Picture 1 (cartoon, helix red, strand yellow):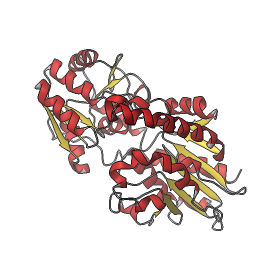
Picture 2 (tube, one colour):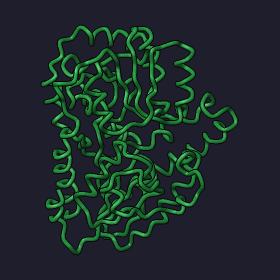
Picture 3 (cartoon, one colour):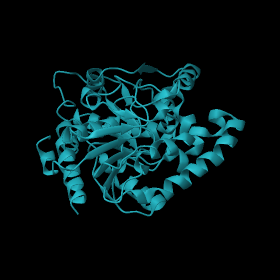
Picture 4 (cartoon, one colour):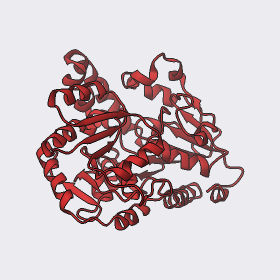
Length: 378
């Protein structure tokens, strides 16, 4: 991939801008490909937990904003959202000719010079400022007083987000679903290039037997609707294993104990353990509406079907009746019915795998570099 990057003239100075670096989730896997493609670029980010991302990214020696010095920033960053606009705008980009931002929050709003070209790979317009305030900061989440105080703050942040949309020359969205949100909130067109999945690593193993459990691989965040999956597991009598961590862990633990469901919270595990779980699971669940949803594609790369809410990115990654089951409504009863349907379908694991390969890392790398270079030389 680094050879493809030689299309960029040596005199052109490139900078990558990412919201923050605290772990290797889907966004960081996109950034990793870009770091490989542009190894001499600088990397800027609001804050960075050292050692939390891959060696490819760590080797870029990310430069951080003043937020890096705030104690507990990794745990309490959502409460620092009002500081993000000032922090991202303080980065001095005067010497760069090409800006590549990977953004779900503030990175797309960096201030560029007149000569620079800015390509934004947009994971989503910031969801907590636009249409998911209640999921993150509703009264049931943070209490009445905090929620009321935060509402005007997030409203102001959404206005800033819209006002700075013009700082990007060319948007690329992770899905048609996100492209529609960019049109709605930014009044801008976005090309669509699906994010990368390492289908070389996530692959089937015919020696591994399928077991009778469902699997979720996800951050434990409110909009993921893992509570819904727990209840569906109980209703269907199917064990559920959940890999991942996040702010909802305590609430989900209490829910599991109160319902008596056969559910295990496994926390964060290695990539190898994630892959092994994909291979052994009867199906992987996606109960929330995702902008894209990387875990379902990783599961399909391992030949494992997916039971997903039929909204958002799942409509673009799961083929109903072929690579999984799409559930019409976000209710436990609907997902229990989806689990029952999945049990009856004769899934072809080779066909599931073949579909996932269309999202391979190499496919993404070629497409995103081609788009970036065309914008850079326009």
